[in-house]
Amino acid sequence: MKRRQKEALLQLGRFCLNLPVAFLIIVPLLYTFMMSVMPASELYSRFWPTHMDFVSYSNVFTKTAIPRHILNSFIVAGSVTILQMITCSMAAFAFSFLNFKGRNVIFMCILATMMVPWESTIIANYLTVSGWGWLDTYHVMILPYACSAMGIFLLRQNYLTFAKELHEAAKLDGCNNWRFLASIVVPLSRPALGALGAYVFLMQWNQYLWPLLVTNSDSVRTVQIGISQLYDIDSEQIGLMMAGVIIVLIPSLSIFVFMQKQLINGLMAGAVKG
Image 1 (cartoon, rainbow, N blue to C red):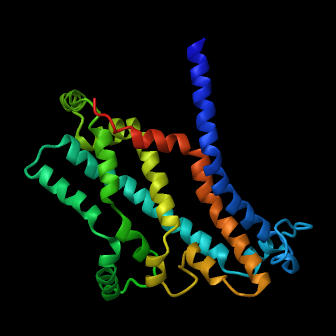
Image 2 (image 1 turned 180 degrees about the vertical axis):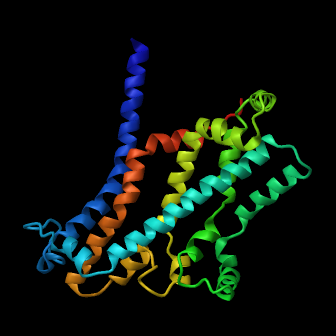
Image 3 (image 1 turned 120 degrees about the horizontal axis):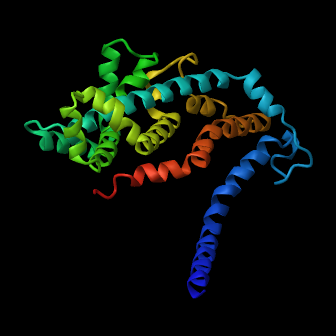
C-alpha cells in the first residue's frame, strides 16, 4: 500500500513539475491562434477576440503561395527522410556486421564530422552546387542531406544490440548481406528507423537558411521561407502570417503527438548494448 502511495505521489510531483513547462509551450501557441482568428481592428487592443474570423486561413490558401511552399517542403523533407533511412541503414549495417580494415577509424572520422559547424561549410557547399548548375532545383535541397553521421550512429547503436550469431546463422542458410539487411535487420529496427525518420523530417521541414540561399523562385522554395515572406507591418497581414504559422506547425505537432512513444523508444533502443 505504501508503495502505491509513493508511486502516486511521484506521478503527482511529475505532473506538477510539467505544468509550468506545458504552460510555457501552450500559451504562445494559443496567442498565435487567437491572433490568426482575431479581426484586424482588435489585434493591438485585445488578447481574446470578440468573435473568431477564419478569413485569414482561407486567404493563406487563396491569396499566397503557401500551398505550393507546403508541397515543396513535403517533397524535400519526405525525399531526404527516405534517402537517409536507406543510406544510413546500409552504412550502419556495414559498421555493425562487416569486418573490414579501418572500420573503426572510418566510423570515428564520420562521427568527427558532427563536430564541424554546418555554417562553416555553407559557402563552400554553395559554390560547389552553383558550379554544378543545381541552384533553384529540388535536388540542391535533397542530395546534400541524403546521409548523416547522426543517422549512421543511431542505427549502428541499435544494430549492435543484435546477436552476432543471428548474422552467422543467416549466412550458413545462404542469406547474403542484402537479404539479411532487408528481411531481418530492418524489420527488427522499426522503432529506431521511425525515430530517425521523424527526426529527419522535422529537421528538414524547419530548414530555412540553406533553401533561402540556393532557391530564388516560389516554385521550389519551402514553407519556412514562404512564412517569412508574409511578414508585413499591416495588421491584416499579421493575421495572415499567424494563420500561416499555425498551418505550418500542424505537421510538426502531429509528429510529436502521434509518434512521441516511438521517438522515445527508437532513441533508447540502442542506448544499452546486450
